Length: 464
Image 1 (tube, rainbow, N blue to C red):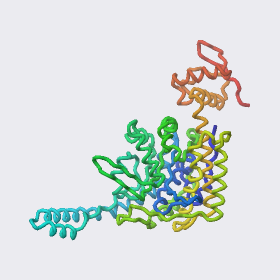
Image 2 (image 1 turned 60 degrees about the vertical axis):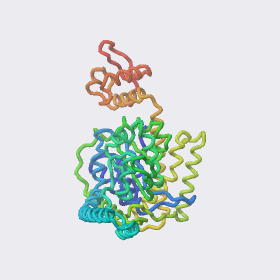
Image 3 (image 1 turned 90 degrees about the vertical axis):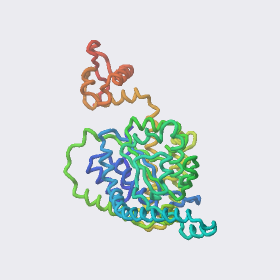
Image 4 (image 1 turned 45 degrees about the horizontal axis):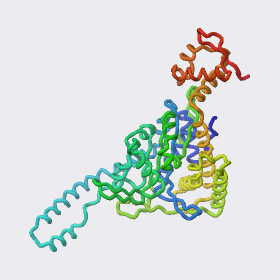
């Protein structure tokens, strides 16, 4: 079943124009480009505000996005365009960091020397205590100039987050490497999933380890966008540990159809670069807006809360109730309660991001933003339902459908195995996948043998 068209207009002028521009420039699916720009907007916005939902609790504007696309679908190209303002911001942070780091090294060396000198004195304990108190704490290191990481373990985040910005992102166009790396090994998967789920919830990180002692981090935010190939996605989306820990239900998943084979040359569109420039400028303005924090380093965030306007509140409640009813035993979302149960919250988070993009100093969320956010959350519910239904179909049946669709597109009245192994769908040319699919088509009457020695068949049911 093909995915529903992504409601790109719901992103608002800046993000929607950027998504369309990226899709046209690199010739990728609009849903892929939309996931990229929305996740970057979340990365920038999450430091500034939370959303206060109608039941009174606040939630971060952090979004976890997962985009499924095959090799050659131009994941990296789309990611490169969408991440441009992030890289620009990191360069600016790096330029400011280098002199601060040099100054810190000098101050730290002087502080340590003075402390050693005090500790070596033969003065009485009270005198040394007074001098150490006058010396003060160790000079604070400047925050490292990284906004995103391509991968991390739970332990790595806990150890290094004190020296990183309070709002981080895990962004990777090769998300399969992250999800199959050390952090998601059999031994580490449970604690990594729990740590990431806690960060999505805005709970921070609290860990006690023999080597590191107690690490208790508050006011941290984490956004995420992973692009993975279909083979890796099948393993991830079906992983019982990740589902039981609630990590998968926190992801906004998109699996757009591949455009490979139809991406003929197109001259660049006149509106592409202006749309991207506007997007870059808007995201940079969000990154540069001052974020509230409770510590001197500025990385223990205390974002302001965005309340829903009365009209937005009514809109959100209507969406919440419609999803809740669909989770009844006989409802269309009965088998997706983990995902559906977070849909209203996802809508609130998305609305907060859209509102900040519309105006960085926003103090509340209006009906327009929540309405657009509900459209996007609803699309992701449909997509999750589609992917779940496909996961229930045996792989041999999916392969048979791929093969049959290819035969019909080619308009072939007959076909031989040798032709399929040479010219057929790329993934189906291997004998281990081709033969079971052919057997299934024969069993169901779509192929009728006409030459057993040549392994040739007549194709039935050709479309008119």
